[in-house]
Image 1 (spheres, helix red, strand yellow):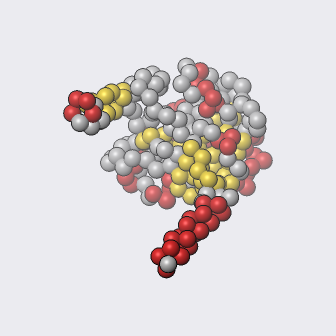
Image 2 (cartoon, rainbow, N blue to C red):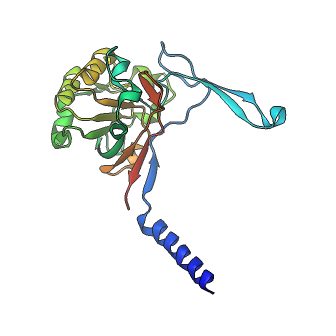
Image 3 (cartoon, rainbow, N blue to C red):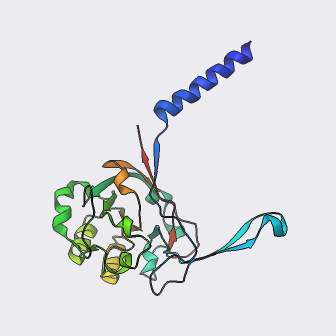
Length: 237
């Protein structure tokens, strides 16, 4: 009898947790797949069956890919030989309260739209030191197409410097790189004293509220420059 009452209490507790306390998880990552397009100078992604249940008693897969494949993040070592590597960045930099700036509510920016400082100016109060800021262009819809690499809306160098001057902690976006001017923009955002974590290739940002919790932990690849991530938006009920 006592055990039965205990079971009922435990079940009630789980239901209460599910109904009112459990946050909603929004997947912000694109799936990885064999032969998926990538940047011209990056290694191609390969996802190959190594063994199967029929051949050896279990399934196991061989994966080869760039550290910047699909939804991923960059750390300073990506562009600076003396910059911090993945294993040198505190885990807190990859998790915490975040704010979404939707640059194309209900739609998407036209191809090659310059993302200027003026687009961010109305949201200036969100660019606080250490903040995690993510902006939406609607270009996750183009993932896997050649246009996603060549026609993307593009952060201007002036806007990148404006963001760098505010010393935010993380900048995320739904394009595969911040800018067609990729070298100078990366150098600006990752330079010593700025060192913004750059999260590229996010998905489903239209499913997020303005404020949420971001989680996007990289693989702990010692001494390296970036990593694919399983990015998640955590939304409280």
